[in-house]
Amino acid sequence: MTRALGFGRDVKNSARQAANSKWLDRLARLGLVARGATYLLIGWLALQVAFGNSGKQADRGGAVQEIAGKPFGSVLLWLLGIGLAGLALWRFTEAAFDHDTGDRLKSLARAVLYTGFAVTTFTYVLGRSSSAAANSNQQSVGATAKLMRHGGGRLLVGVAGLVLVGIGCYMIYEGVTKKFEQDMKLGEMSRRTRQVAEKLGMYGGVARGVVFGLAGVFLVVAAVNYDPAKAKGLDGTLRTFASTPLGPWLLAVVALGLIAFGLFSLCEARWRRV
Image 1 (cartoon, helix red, strand yellow):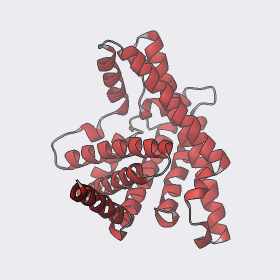
Image 2 (tube, helix red, strand yellow):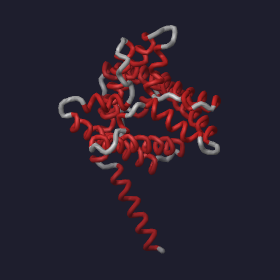
Image 3 (cartoon, one colour):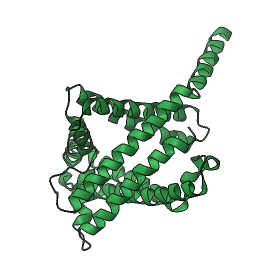
Image 4 (cartoon, rainbow, N blue to C red):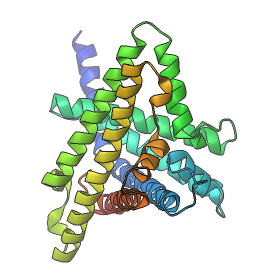
């Protein structure tokens, strides 16, 4: 019994050492760069949709397609997948060792999400699956319809929508209150750099929260109306902004916000505490 407990402590200590290692720090920062690049591309694609290029797919699938079509696209996608995997691993370590239960649950949810992104990116670049480049609207409608066919599925869709709305509201809260600064190495930043990063984090966080929240609203509407077609992915959610009375200009404002969040992610890659 004593030997088993000692072995367990050794394993836990080894895991903690790995979590605090330089290689995990570098993987996490590569992941933040990968996340930043993805949001930059999604924002750029959304801008093109706003100003007439409606054939573009303004979501993660569209970003993957853009990367794949560039010189050395396969290499870039491998780096993207590795970065997302590093981001997932970092979040898993936070889920394992963070002292706050709420933060652990949030880290676990993010870890699972980034793991899925990494896996689909790897399978796409290996030519085994096109899911990484699939349209988010089709994925959202398909997943909602599949879930609603089962008992209690409609309720689960509604709950998932409310969770997304809550996540979106929290992102807006983080942006408005500048809560993200708690995780930044502000002492290593110049005054000007700090001001720029602060503005990017606020604008980008609010825009990202609005998009997440609206996507959640569509899920709730789909559940209430028992109509999977009401669900929208990122692409459909972004296009909704263009159909408002403010027209494409509102979509452009949101798209620039996503670009701002992408730039803020690059700032995090350099100055965030990992």
